[in-house]
Length: 452
Image 1 (cartoon, rainbow, N blue to C red):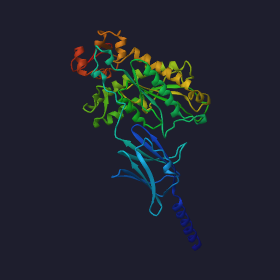
Image 2 (cartoon, one colour; image 1 turned 90 degrees about the vertical axis):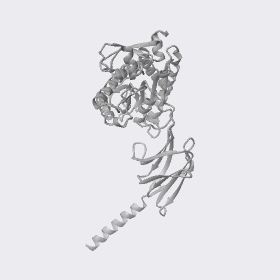
Image 3 (cartoon, rainbow, N blue to C red; image 1 turned 180 degrees about the vertical axis):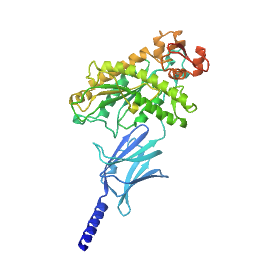
């Protein structure tokens, strides 16, 4: 019995000793620079407990890691274009803990969190440094200053182009380590180049570099741009390398229902608006009206999404193998904006050897971008939003035609949604059509869309 007790004591002592020497190691530090924030990623040998706090005069951020040691040269980290002027380290608690200090050259708001291992990386500690809000993407409502006698002042159709993944998130990885994030950014830039050359369009990229943007932030950026369309570009991946084929996706009915529930649940915070320019607030609406407005807005957006998606699918099928013969539906987060038509284009399986070879080719990227561009152009040439140069051109480019346009009511429309989507005030729309506040409209009814 005594021998057995001594054995247990020895085992426990050995275990405690193992714990005491199993300090986590920081093997590498990577920096990703985005327009609105910088991300530091610390690669670890194992998970650590950490604490982050700030100091003033001078501005510093202190990161304390428990039971950790540094095995990387901080001086070799490229801090150019980052808000960090210097990164240094020291030990605490008799060398048991690690302290990393970030000396700043501008004010930031820090946020830190741990990431668990994945297929590419082990344990990581992430520190995001958010700069003061400077956003070049928001588009002012040109309809407010547009002149019906000056076509040059009419607004462009705004296309938000979203290259998937980025930064710490490479997306799917194919043969030769070709990364989805790199391929889709190339296609996004090609699409932007095509749209810039086309009169009446204004393309904007949600990201134009190798940095990460959250899914919700991607759609939020599109909303701040006052986008008329959101196009998310991806490349598929699968463990079976034989999987192949491109696809085009729109929001599923189930995905629309879940997003509607999310918006209704948080409408009291006053941040929820639908309709882009001239937005309709949900904050002051009762639950029934808010639900109706959301439902109508999402119905109209999904209808336009399907039209554009079908056109792009047809264009892509002329040169690419398609995964399915029709446009597919899913509840992807990037498709859930209730007031912006949104599509997701999977340009092929990057995990398939043949398709990966095509996708990393600049010529194929241009061909894929051209197919998406043609679908976008066809839709907005046929159905241009009011008070755009494209609408003015469709009406013959005459001064008289520019004074007003018309809209035929379809199932699911409300006057509020029609006003919002055409960027005119509800009062002006009522006045132009002699409507009272009840806003009763009928399917097939033709409404005049006023020019201001």
